[in-house]
Image 1 (cartoon, rainbow, N blue to C red):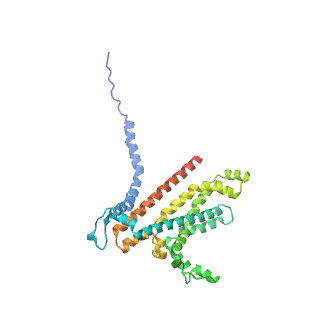
Image 2: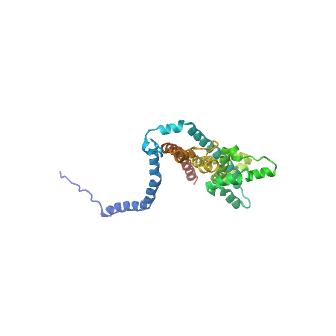
Image 3: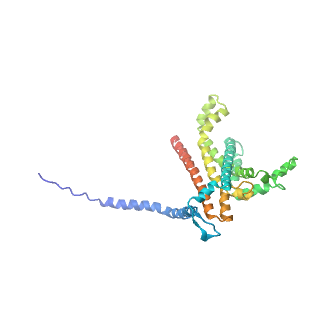
Length: 312
């Protein structure tokens, strides 16, 4: 019986050349992204890590030598202090009110713009304009041009019809901030919902009309279920930004009259009270809340993409 030995198969030179070239090609395609990745980590992640570290210290900028490690005491103070809890509640109330009203008005405007009429492009451009205004400029516009009790537009119109002359900011401070944010964020909601309306199945709507369905029945049973994902996306994206809003509160009321939200409280703790540790803890909580909302927003976006792919 003859024993046969099988020599190991030598790797072909072509295959040996293909493997390094494939790796080099992969690195060549990823290399242009490395500077952007390094820049993003240096600008966003490293400061956030430093903020998290500072949040565990009792650190007052006026007494830097007295800083010491306190664990989660700063977080406990943020969640138990009366003023800080009130700022958290104000943040929630401001966000919910602005998002709901903006969604309702955005839906109405989207339904109007979904119809064909002369000058629709001009009207659409004018309605988008408030979202393009710089937030500080928008807040100054509302504070001085509209709300001012002496020369503001609102009191001018009331004076023309013989009405009262209220001080809008002093009498309704939180409502004044909410109105300016609703004015600025309604176009954003309108664009998202208008995209949802234009992605409807027109054949399904025409079939419903042939079967005798009214416009209200089509809206309730076809349009609203189709817009559910778009409504969720608008609410989540709007919440991410409005939770972090600082410009309107700072510009219109300077955080007074019970309008101080959590971002303004972070500013107040850091720049006025010089409590670096406490401000860092509040800032970390804002980021955590934004991440939670953003996670749900990404899920909604991915589900929308899956629906579009399944239709295609």
